[in-house]
Length: 266
Image (tube, rainbow, N blue to C red; front, side):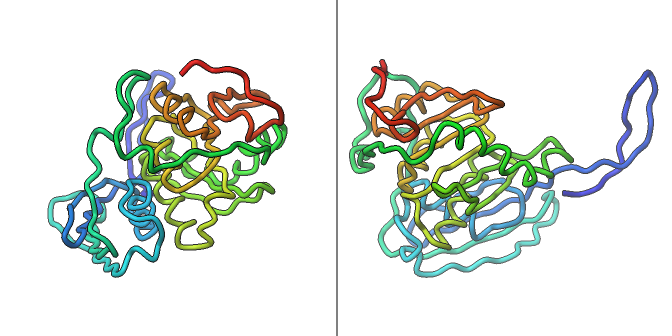
């Protein structure tokens, strides 16, 4: 965050005052013998972001697939914020995820790379009352949003539930990438993790969980149809509008309660 001077109009008059704003930087990742891509992120936890992004996009399956990682500050003149250039060399030849990774509706054929994602077998890992408590467990972690209104957050819990990773960024995807990267560089026990995010859940967020092997995804926001469709195909637990004393279960009820799931129409 950075403190700047602004003019605020309130109660019929202007007033000069200081204000905190979220910073954005640029990370350019160069994959040896592969693609180069640039992403605007909050300029911190760059390594975690890169590893999480590579995992979430299907470039790697584990941290051991990154054979070399080199990070450079790149002082470009005229660009706002901090700029980083990261060079990575992977164990195998990378593939470039295309737009077919996204499921926009419930119609159409399944892209050929989806079956490799596998399918979960839901089993009770968390009770409804514990799930409702998750937002309160991270209430002290979202100071950046309260100060700026500009950040998304992603949290990984174990089934206890205990907070294992916390990440924030100006983008909801990049916040998730940072949380995945932190876990990948640590215990890497994705099969025993719950992802809580503050952003809406789209198909590409669901894809990140499926590729990492996370069984349960929850958001305080909405779930989009593409994400719901994809989650149901692979039995991912998907929860939206986790607020106050309620939440919606869109897929994988078996992760939260015992008994056969109610029938769902994709």
